[in-house]
Image (cartoon, rainbow, N blue to C red; front, side):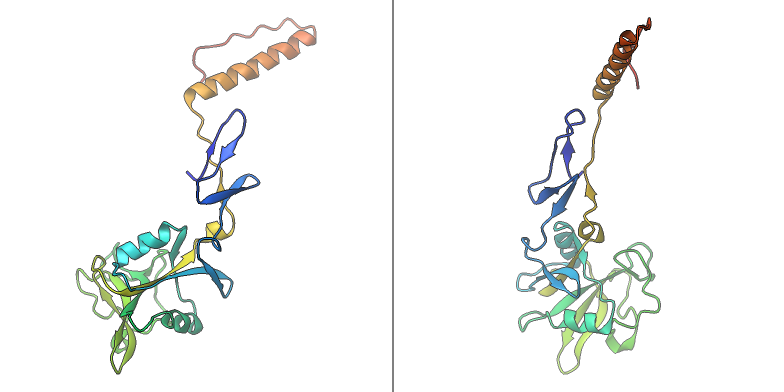
Length: 215
């Protein structure tokens, strides 16, 4: 739930890290350290403090973001440029956690046909053994940055690149109204009373029976 609403007064409140924009909650990515790259809000976490692939994903998700998916060779080059001298690599949003051997992007779509990611020895899924379910780029001396599969829980000095979730960019964090049974009963009573009042004003003999439960 991204907001709490009072179903009677329609008063809503947003989480501490979001603000109200009309009838929605919106996250201020700029104020949270994100910057624009090619029209996409992105955030780069240095690999100075070790982190695992799993924790890197959580790091992004906690900021209303996902791992950055490179969609072109220029995206890939930009992502690789974010690795500093003290960074040993960069996490790539590819995994086969659901089905062993079936590599997918973190959004669940297949990587089949992808020509952007540079794999070690030009082998797609290089190093994809039983427990190596998550992809990352490792800087290899005299060779360059190459992608291979590795352990998802291993702490590494790797860079994490996050991209704002599409629904956050589109301002789709709509208020969620959680109406309880009692609130529904009270609301129905109020509706029926209004009906009775209208009937009375019209000179009609209206009788409204309020039940104990309307759900």
